[in-house]
Image 1 (tube, rainbow, N blue to C red):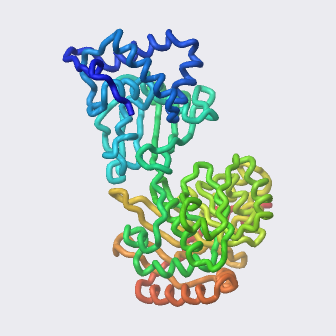
Image 2: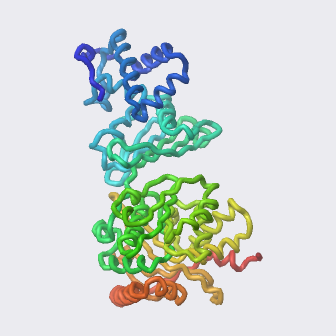
Image 3: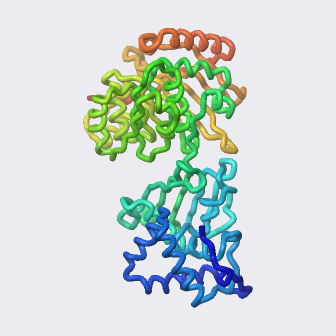
Length: 477
């Protein structure tokens, strides 16, 4: 892509600094352009792959190299690049993180982080020092400006000190890289932060999830039967816990087993699911939704006219919880969402509080809505070396006549001391009635398998109370 004539491929052996050379080159080119806006427009078009813009940038570089030859050596980060290509990536592109973005040797590295001038990247799921560091903070700030140009709607400055965006991943066609950034005043001066994460959501089967160690092999058919009864599920856990991939697995299982065409709206603020591009999309009615958070409730009402049978939402925040509760209260099932927490028993409280904090109203009322909507919670956690594991699969129980009104009953719980999953076979009558109405044969298979596993690997203390829900429910209206 970035070829160079032999006469400008010459390498010198002097100590001329590459980064200083590129800095001077960029200043000279900027003076030749009509305005700063013209340069920014050129850079933005080049970054998104506009062939004419790239050619224009290359011509500027080659002209400068003829008039002001570079006589030094390329930095280690750009070894293997042509000189012109190295200058281009330092001037317009991603500087020393270019290898992570474009070199296939880093294709399996899921994330990279810049803090100040220091850089770390993921190797087998864990951060380690990146081979190359930034020469100064100014270049980090320039990189942040470069990244912001990927999305004209994003601002990053003192008034907007945090930003999120995404751009296409050159190493994985059809996937993207998510970017999150901080600048002062959100962080201290000199500690600008850039975190990049590759889209690694895959459409894995339950068998493949068992092969990865996320679930036990004995639970494959159990989870398949559960999903066929269409419960409302929250898949939750920290970043890099595998929750998006596992949620996609559950949705895929529902689509595979269905004997009719399922209507599935997908709501994602930062789209990760690849389901709309799979063969399953040819059999089902998958609707990828684009909407701002403040538009989601209106969209939820409109969706009812498009005959949805299910709903998939990722990274649920306040607006997504409003939609989840709205549809759950109307009796819709097969709602699946992802969330960030590790406490299954407190998810109803957290969902209710997220709505209350933004929309106001009555916290107890929001909690009652969430308790009606949320039936099953799967808690995942990241492990060493990039592994993931299902820690708990719980039924959320609301028993108003009991002393402890809200509790999580764990069907499945990982025991690190025994190194295996334990099981409990109790199913509340309310959940059981909903399961058999949805799919009686699958419900009966689920209960039978769960009973056998509970007898073989019993969980002695399956209930975990929610003190937060208890406080809200016992408080004044």
